[in-house]
Every structure is written in structure tokens, then in C-alpha cells.
Image 1 (spheres, rainbow, N blue to C red):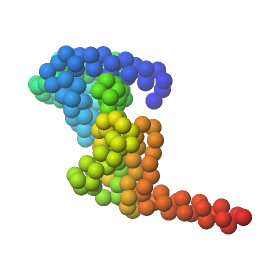
Image 2 (cartoon, one colour):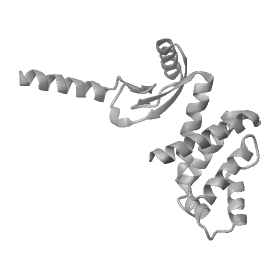
Image 3 (cartoon, rainbow, N blue to C red):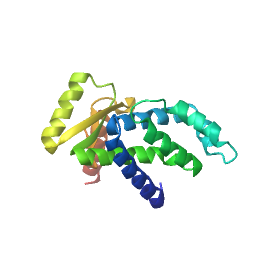
Image 4 (cartoon, one colour):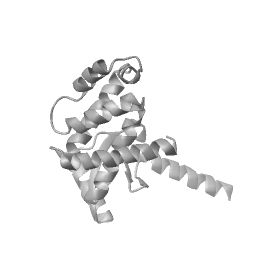
Length: 186
């Protein structure tokens, strides 16, 4: 993403966080709404282009946005954001806004976001043990999300605070391969 777009996404996320702090449900409700909209856009490729089309009526766009964001906690700020982005043909910024909002909210709460990627889904017990170990190591609260990548073959790769901790079988095999190449070169 271009630097200008990142700046805009960050400013919009800051404004959204301010509104979220004053809204029922707070930032968590708004994060949930943004995630739901991201899923809809991923599943329905025609939704975003239609909402951004300059010939689509404001009434039709409003109806779609109301359907995308049903009434509930966090609805009003998210509807306002969607309307504004659609009018400016800038809905592509939604993922960046969602990421910036999470970063700002975590910074405000003193929480580190971590992502654990494993070959198989982590059991709740293992995920909790990993989260606690990361908290001990960082001396901060950690919010852990887990993803699955079968190509890792086993183990886990953790991304936290700009660092990558690779404990995967694939990573270990790559390190071994590199050491063998260096030994053969001697």
C-alpha cells in the first residue's frame, strides 16, 4: 500500500477508535463489524465495486450498507465509515483501517498482538500455554490469533512485535540445509 494510503487509513482508524470509545460495545464491537464486512467483500466480489460506482444511487448504497451492518453495537460508526469510503471510491482501505484500529487499540491497552501459524490447528490448551509463554517473555499482555499452514509440516511459527520465532519443522530443515551447505563450502 502506498504511504499516502497508509496515512489516510491510520487517520481514519484513529477517528474510528475515538468514536468506538464513545459507542456501545466499544472498539471490540467495531472490530467485529469490520471483520464481518471483510468476509462479505471476500465472498461477494461484486459488492465493493457496486458500492463505489458513481452511478449507483445513494439510496441503493445506503440499503446495501444497512444490510452489511445490521443494527447493534458499533453499527453507526461503521456505517458512517462505509458510506464515506464508498463515496470516495476508497473501500480498498478497509483492511488497512482494520489493522490500524487493532494496532491503536492494542497500544492503548498495552497489549501485544501475536500470530501463531502451525501445520495443524492448535488445541485451546496449547494456544493458552503459548500465549502465557509469550506474555512471560515480553512482560506484556498478549492477544494470540492462530492460523493453519500445512506446508510447515509441524511445529509453530510465531510473529510478535515485528519478530518471527520459527519453531517449525520446515524452518529447522532449512536451517540444517544452510549449515550443511556452509560446511560443504569449507
